[in-house]
Image 1: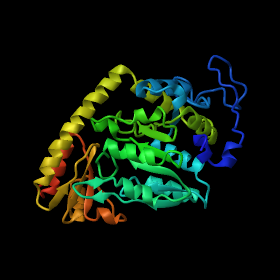
Image 2 (image 1 turned 90 degrees about the vertical axis):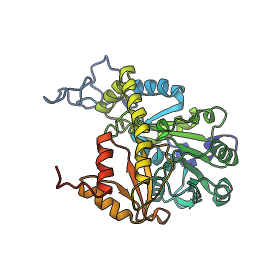
Image 3 (image 1 turned 135 degrees about the vertical axis):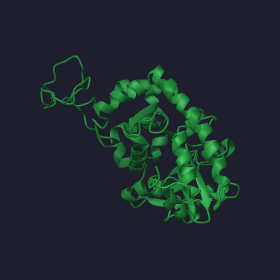
Length: 359
């Protein structure tokens, strides 16, 4: 393989991208068939009667600074979910190519592959003390037409991070064979090194980031795909223009200001403390078999009766997550770490001392 783009769909490499009308903020726009008037309720800075920029250039610059990469190494996406989608569309031919996942893991990899008509191969995690990545199993499970290997670390829904040596081994094994996509949606909660080192000299490695968790912007849908400039340029041509809306651009730029990031950092530190407190308290409750180690903002709990725990929480007006379609997670419940008072209420509910009927 002479270039990482040799892995991409050849017909898309030949496709001429759409050219949007010129975007120059200081000019009167009579080139895009927009309304010249704002809605009365429009309080945005730019105006919602005007299309957003074809790509959120100012936001890309801010995110590149935030993550410590060059602008040419970053593509802004609508959450990291859109990044997963565009990667599979860009590199997997329907009915020919496929992806490799390590379940139990984030189910959107499977879903987007299915929508694209791509094969899904699996190298299940080994459940020992936690759910561990088996490098040899992953390498052996890949097929001739496997184009993308997805590694979620910290992994959703199990919560644990994969060792650096294991991720390095997977990246080395698939060099020249497939993209290795490291989904770091929860890395801010881990307190361990991220994988930016792989971007330098490893053109087949892609990182996914999101602001949904760490800066409380799940509703703004801001993600980032970090990769070599060649991969970014190619995927930029696959995405349509105007995908990132004006209100989200303005909110995310405000969230990346230093004062806002300081508050986010304080809240992350609190979540990590609460994660440990919640894990200890849950393990002491009757019916809880195991609380898995977590580097994320949630805990995976194995119970004698996970449905009973979920129902007890629901009676206290609290929702938790079950995984009925994942055999490896039978009788497991995923619990997001909430505010201290929310965590206290959950513990009382699971212990059977609180319901929505109580004050």
